[in-house]
Amino acid sequence: LRVKIGVLGATGPAGRGLAARLSDVGYDVLAGSRERVKAEAVVAELREQWGGRVSRITPANNQAACDADVVVLAVNADAALATARYFADQLQGKIVVSMANHLEKHGTEFNAILPPHGSIGKEMQALLWRSQVVTAFHLVPAAEFVNLDRKMESDVVACGDDDDARHTLMEIISAIPDLRAFDGGSLENAVGMEAFAAVLLTINIRHKVRAGLRFSGI
Ligand SMILES: NC(=O)c1ccc[n+]([C@@H]2O[C@H](COP(=O)([O-])OP(=O)(O)OC[C@H]3O[C@@H](n4cnc5c(N)ncnc54)[C@H](OP(=O)(O)O)[C@@H]3O)[C@@H](O)[C@H]2O)c1
Image 1: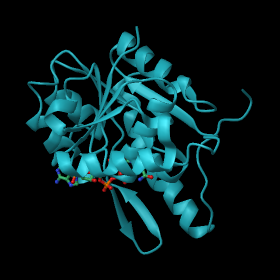
Image 2: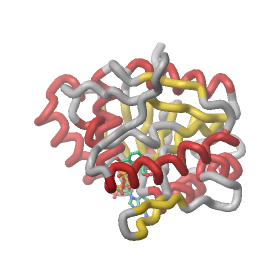
Image 3: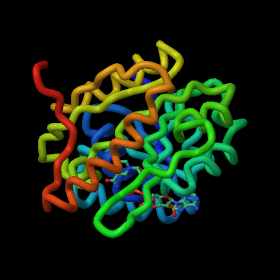
């Protein structure tokens, strides 16, 4: 039996794209927003564009989307920790996925803003001590997600302290065609992906490209 997946902030480019991809490969998805009507409008747009491929997405408010077994925080990066704190009780016992890149732009350079525990992932696990936090998707451009006809051609590194939670998320990632999942170890390493997002975006600005992450030699 497949897990149900909730996406908080599914109205943004990253969340709606992820919801669409997951529905397309057969997962039931609760697409959340702070305002349910916004989620309804986004799901209607997705249905118009992709028809039956997104039929497994149900619009919800963020609170209802927390009912899923796996909950992805796809809210604006500034709001990721506050949202996690707000829903801490509902998220108890669940796998919570952080994809937040908290970045600041200085000229043509991005830098990561890291919280006291070293990464947003670790900070979130400290807040959600009754949940299993896994980090992933930091380097996947939202534009790649939302076009279901395009190959993903990205590698996704999952970091998390709980082995089962990390493996469950890797299975979900691998279900999306051409997206490869890699085990990046515990949350100690989440900082590597969060900080590398700043490097990747800087490269994309300075080289005028839209590069993603793909490991060689595999
Ligand atoms: N965009 C990318 O290419 C990309 C790639 C990899 C990772 N990420 C990460 O994925 C996450 C989502 O990215 P995005 O570009 O889709 O973000 P976004 O458009 O900035 O925000 C996504 C959604 O977050 C909700 N939101 C905004 N402010 C909020 C607040 N104060 N409290 C609670 N919810 C709030 C909004 O939904 P409602 O108004 O409907 O509630 C909004 O539609 C971020 O953490 C980002 O770092 C993005």
